Every structure is written in structure tokens, then in C-alpha cells.
Image 1 (cartoon, rainbow, N blue to C red):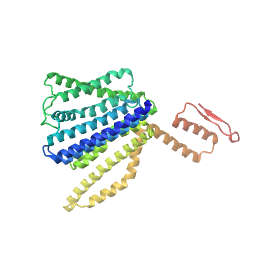
Image 2 (image 1 turned 90 degrees about the horizontal axis):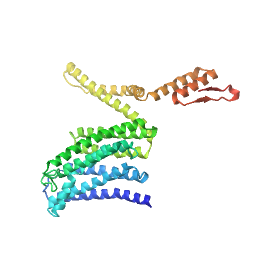
Image 3 (image 1 turned 135 degrees about the vertical axis):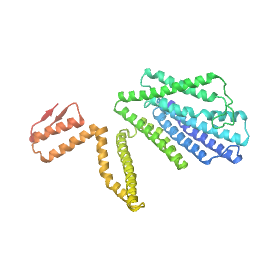
Image 4 (image 1 turned 90 degrees about the vertical axis):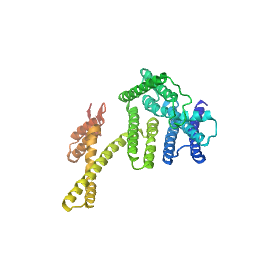
Length: 409
């Protein structure tokens, strides 16, 4: 019964944030239709709705799956809490916009909704970047020694949140509304400053905790941390790329950033639930190879175009499309050999053990073509197994009619 109640509760935490988000979007649309008290920007509205939806659904669904399978894993509950907070913030923001645009409703409720939406983003940013690093992947601290870091993270988040929530003056998204709960005291600033220091130190300490966990981890947990690290890098790089794309197209930038936000819950969910856990090495290898290959080919392509265009201008006085054709043919020619060289370099640099094992097997395969002495082949086979698989003991038995038994420790 207890397990069933937990499952019912956690899946309720998936549906409730979605309903809250839809209500918030409905209030925002209604605010635009009933009046123009607020400036309306369709791209900003689309960005906010997309990011809220992409943040809410993956965190809520993956958090629910983690809790359903591992109820004691705190990361699942954190993800469910993130989804619920996104839904509440969207509802509060939408209602505040509707209240300002229409003038209907209770003033205290409208001001409180605007106040809540002005600081609700803080836990969304600080909780995953501190507690998630500290608790990943099993939802527990590395050891009791790390409890002060967890307390520091919690106190820092609360302190900074109180500073923003109690700051006097206009609210973030609603500057025309004065903070109804503002406190004009230097103590608020001091609490906020202390919160920033504690939160920053806890982030650094949480990162150190993850590194220490990686060094002490067994093979399975090491793979989980690889998934988490890979996901973090993908999210950060994609968001930065989306920021650059915004120079040319806001909708495309919104789409890229929204997709990037999927990375954190998706990759951590794969790691915690151990779905295709050991494929991360192949994914990292392919990412390094094709990422380096793409960057090299792009630089080479545009570099050759620039050089050839200048050469054509010097010779003929005008540019020519022949430069593009030559560059394209050059890239097509260099693709395969360049990929092999990059693959070989990355294998030697980052996968040395696997690289040495492959070379050993290739050498043994070449020996098999020419060697006819069975005893020599037996010795070579034992050496190959020892060097590639590195077992504690190697033994080789031959059928009695084929010869003698050979054994090496």
C-alpha cells in the first residue's frame, strides 16, 4: 500500500504542473485579449511558454519514473519539485498579467502572484546546480562529511531567495507593482550577500564531491557519472550556440535552447535508471571524432574559399564560383582519410587501453597467417589474452591428440 501511495503521489506531481502551466498560459492569452495594459511581445510569450513546457515535462516525467523505481533516491523528488515549481510560477505570472490587464480580481492575490513569479526562478537554477551535483547518482551524500555542504547549499539558496523576495521597489517582470512584502532594512542585503557566498561555495564543493565520487566509483557508477557529465556539456554548448543563433533568428534560438533544456533530465534519467549504461563510451568517442572532424572541415572549407577567392581576384579581377566547387571537392576527398586520422589520434589519446588491445589483436591476426608451430601459437595466444583482457590467471588446454597442455600464470 505504501508503494502504491508513493506511485500515485508522484504521478499526480506530473499531471498537476501541466494543468498549472496550461492555466497560466490561458491567463496570459486572456490578458492580451482583454486589454493592453501590458506590452505584448509574441516572441517573448512563445519563448516563455516553450521553455516552461520543455522544463516542466521532462523534469516531472523523469522524476516520476525515478521515484517509482527508486523511491529513496532524492534526485527523483527534486525533479518532481522542479516541475511543480515551474507550473506554479507560470500560473502566478499569467494571473498577474491578467489582473493588471483586466483590473478584475483581488488586489492582494494579484500582487502576491506577481511577487511569487519574480523570485520563483531562483530555486530552479540553484537547486539543480548544487544539490544535484552533490547527490548524483544514488541520491545520497558521498559520506557524512559532506553534510555541511548540503546545509550550506540549502541555507545559501534560502538566503538569496529571501533577498530577492524581500527587496523593496518594483518587481522583476512587473516593475509597475511595488513589492508588497518588501522590507527596507540593510539586514536583507546582508542575508542576500551571505546567501550568494554560501551558494557559490556549495556549487564548487558539490563539483569537487562529484570528482571525488568519480575517483572512488566502481565501473557502474563511473559510467553513470560519464552520462551526467556528457549531458551537462551538451546542454551548456547547445545553450551557448542558441545564444549566438538569436542574432539572426529569435524563434530558432528559442527552439535550440528549449531542446537543450531536455538534456539535463534526460541524461541523468538514463544514468540513474541504467538504460544502455555502457554505451556512453561509444557516444563520447563518436562525439569527439565527428565534432573535431566537423570543426576541421568547416575551417578548411571557408579557409580554402577565402584563399581561392583572393587568388581569383588577383588574377581575373573578380570573384568566381569555382572557389566553392574546388573547396567542396577538397572536403569530399579529405573526409575519409581525415576521419581515420582523427579517430586514431583520439583512440591513442583517450582510449589507450582499447587502442593497444586492437593493435595487439591485429598483430596476432597477422601472425596466424604465417605461424605453423602450434606451441608457439599457444604461447602467443596466452600473451594476447593477458595483454588485452588482463585477467589474474590465464590457462590454455589443448585436446590430448593435438599436443600437450600449456599454461602460464
